[in-house]
Length: 381
Image: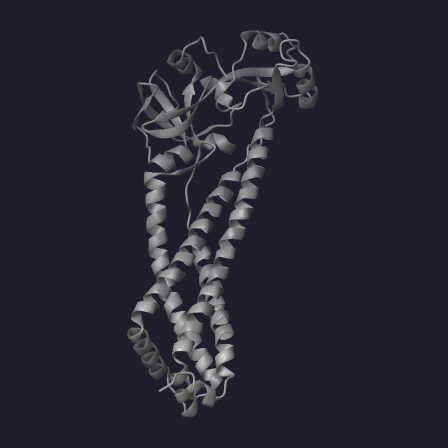
């Protein structure tokens, strides 16, 4: 006898209502797995977007050799004088920079302070909106920081006990996109001249060989043994490679989490079939084939899984929203905002649907190979 889809759905929903407590628990289990998949995926998306903004400059950086935290480094003024004494055809510009991890408006941020005239030519900054800082008390922020903390042009922030106003939003390469930028004179006045600055950026002249210049700088008496000289993209590449490795591991964990659906479906379907052995025997004796029953229970699991999928979308969206707004995730001081992509939902939906079907069919295989006589005798009347 041919059975219509409405009849099948009516039968399935009636069964789910009868077993609603267990169905709800299974739904919550599916939802937890889906939420893990979405959250891990959104984290991987964010980190992938972060390391793709890699600095491309070939300026040289001079910084203290034995530092662990860049903010702990100091620069002796004699280093700058020694570099300035090199021939003009080798060096176009030297730029000092102050580097600090600070809490600003109860938010952890990176503050960079460098001469304003070097922001574009050496630090590769470009103005997205607003204006460059013109007066004392004005700063600019990178796009990453502005997005993470919902800061806008004109927002007031407190830095080191002093009030500052955001005059512009900047676009920057690499890790600098998530910093607050301040003119160098303001930075020296704010932190005091005794502590000095943390590093020197050295821009090679147009026709100078950067690798040769690096060797010459490293051999200076004021630098040799105490300071390191490296290209500015070296640190970014090392950090980006580390983030790539973390992203790859996150992707692996993301898709491994879906394997839990197979085991969860297998377990829940086995339990349901065990408790319904007599009913299965009755249905088989009425002429319903074991293939039809297998697909029927697979469809039952799919219905529970799809509702769990929808529930996970809602809970994940709420988690991501409050995480990004209330407590952004930081990796080495840089805000990483969770990003949900439509492709992630489509991939998760189709992959999980197949895994639910596979788990159900594997579980049902043993029961539907049993003779009707054995199914009817599974439960004593």
